[in-house]
Length: 172
Image (cartoon, rainbow, N blue to C red; front, side, top):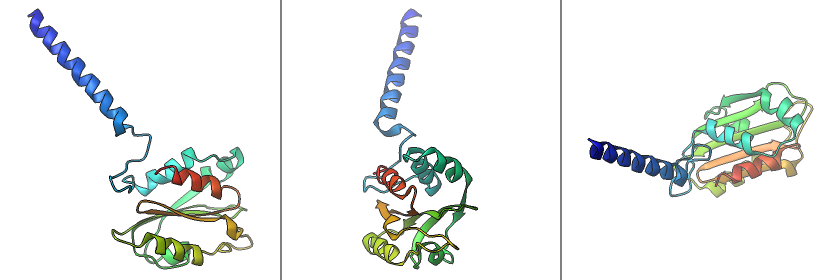
């Protein structure tokens, strides 16, 4: 009976150590899930949350902007409004304040397999309107268009564009 109990405890210990080492080797849910080709496997909602969590934003921006954001699905019909151009994509998510005195927008899209991402980024950069809001706008130098794998981000913000862009690129 002692030998059987010892064997069961030894197997339990082996499974525990194996499970812990697997979690440390990529099973950590705090970081992005990536495929072998560098594409992010997380949902756009999760990617957006990771960007806001990790970006070095000042307290005022977090309090008055991030905590009061409205998320909207970007569709084929609304794509031109958010990016200034039509793009073929799988899914899209816009994040913008419901009411804000400062101009701010962060958009994410997951492009289709085989899409020319560099062309899509160039089209967005050329056509995104930093003056899309009534009475306010963003300096054109504060329009960031980046990608990590097949996810493309557009952020327009004078206050936090660079920090959000860096947080997104850190998901690589």
